[in-house]
Amino acid sequence: MRWGLWTLAARAARGPCSNCPDRALHLTHLLATRGPHSFTGEDCVELHVHGGPAVVSGVLQALGSVPGLRPAEAGEFTRRAFAHGKLNLTEVEGLADLIHAETEAQRRQALRQLDGELGQLCCDWAETLTKALAHVEAYIDFGEDDNLEEGVLEQADSKVRALEVALDTHLRDARRGQRLRSGAHVVVTGPPNAGKSSLVNLLSRKPVSIVSPEPGTTRDVLETPVDLAGFPALLSDTAGLRDGVGPVEQEGVRRARERLEQADLIVAVLDASDLASPSSRNFLDTVVVPGGGQSSGGSTQRLLLVLNKSDLLPPQGPGPCPALPPHLLLSCLTGEGLDGLLETLKTELAAVCGDPSTGPPLLTRARHRHHLQGCLDALSHYKGAEDLALAAEALRVARRHLAHLAGGGGTEEILDVIFRDFCVGK
Image (cartoon, rainbow, N blue to C red; front, side, top):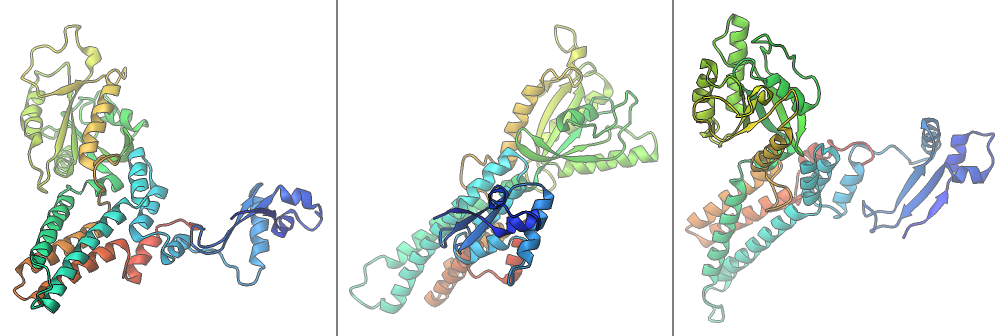
């Protein structure tokens, strides 16, 4: 139940010469919510202050004179909600991600986690372990009882096998959820003067890189966080790949190749009007053709070939050139082809980061993976246990990992790390 009232704090904000309660009514309203129906689960009061910074400052000064009142710490309201069971830990993390979301995909993912999808999945898995543990302990306690139904241990084994498959599937997601939360690494590469810096400026909608007709203008890796078709990305402009003219450019090329090894998505740029040149052919052979292989980290890199400077092409299209893999035509000068490029980037980044609108909940933090891996390891101990008492203990350990993931039994240190990322007042 809620109601609005004007407060004396608003009068204090207006100063001692103001004694008209009607004017105070327009400055501050009080909104009270009885627990447990509030955000925190406690009796709460919100002050809706109307006016400029001086009014807000006056209200805060008036409240500061009230005994027992103090400013809230960062994340304190959310921590109280967690303490009163209004949110579990994965939902708290979802709220934090929602506050810090910078792209549409991050917002959708955060809302799904705040709505409790990951927490509910963990609860379902914990319920499966509870039933399996109950069957094992029933066999331990009543194994010689004729009234115990047949196949009790087989039922437990079946539940554990099904859960192992589910956990392994989530852990083999190529860390898509973590990329969605922190941003995919997109590296723009190509030979000199292909238009890499122009593309980076076009995608970031700001002059990140210097653009010049002189080859080798970019000699270091320039990075900028961007919103690419609704997905977060760290966009890297790199030096043109060629044999360096001097030691500085050679170092730039070395760093460019290093970034290629770390990339989640490579945007390979070629001059559409110069495909038959030795530099273009060499780039195709050394970067584009092997681009679909395995990165040094063991995960599959994705590569998108862009033929820039399409405005320089004759009406019949590119001239004689080596066989090209699938590609997109683009003119950074006129913007023609940009919509198609953004749509393709959206598809590629959805594969890299996962689509937050569909599919199972994503694992967005290393903490999630740690506890799911711990649960899976405990289940492997269950299968290898020769004693039923040890098997039951393995199931208890697995359940504890799921409980920690959702916030049950979490240490204060872990909670401090999570809640300190909240802004003051939330």
